[in-house]
Length: 452
View 1: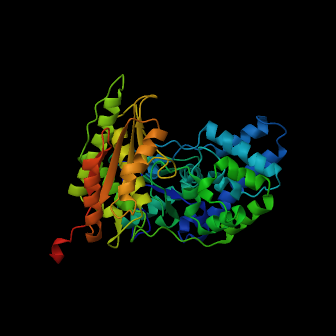
View 2: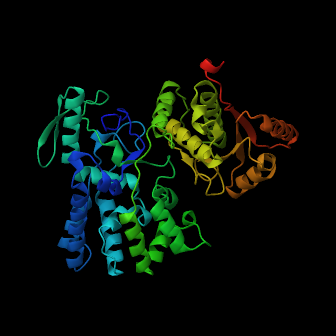
């Protein structure tokens, strides 16, 4: 990291993406002029679309070709959790980008930044996809950066990495025997946890200027998170001046790189969690014909295993910042991401379904219409801890048409939470069957050995 390169995990992607807005302030010599190069590329797409007469004509297809990029697997950033192999931007997504851009251009906005802001408007397009595109465009620059850093740090380079413009000797990734590229940490920003990767709120929250401009445009009566991408696109198609203002703020507001030292989004520590998941495997039974009992057993096993790694493997530390608990929404997203890792590791045909706190339930495992189990997660500090069990979760189960439910409580171990936790256990003991299962995950922070 001191050399200016991101210290990536080599066996799966780190939750980072290349933010093109950061290129303008980069001090990396290999990235000098990179921002202008990106703008020129997007302007070529715009020129082709301006001259295109009909959808899918020769110029339209040429524009699609300029936006289609595979993921640069050699960078080890993105969303892949069991490897470094992601999706990139294929023909389908390139087509959506072109069609969406043409619609915006017809409304009178032809700025190259519309492609960088596409995660706000286009379904299936998130910041990781745009990062794949930028990584592909900067492949030669990143290869030269890698060669320089390796020379400075005396890292052996025994792999060949070939681009359209040349061939470079770079390190070998020992996990997959592929070439390894480095990326300057000053142009990286964090990706949200799994399940939220394509939502408007999380896409724009990393950019304060974009967030504030959206809030001003939409008005105080609405929240950005409440709008679909299609709805937000309609806002700007009907009000192109607002989109121009958004682009202007995006273009001219200085951006700060991710603080890797403090790691506020636990991006670095998340890699450790993935290693914990690998080191503490959970074997989940598979079935060709899922029953309600099967689904309920899997959901319960995931919850209990989550509680175990919180208690025994130090993962609970990620739920706190400077000794203070993170918001409950973070805990929900964290649980969902861990649950997804275990489902992926077991190659399950069923998977968690959730809106991570935006919908009626925090977590749902389902297989068909009649086999559903819902999970509601609460922190022990939640003022609605008891009503959550007695009224909220049963109501959610009814709305989801689920006959099984689990109440997952993360006990933060604070003195003020002791009485509510005692009342919760009493409520569980007096509940009338069928009642939700209670799983308590103990997450109290332990003092380090040096302080004992």
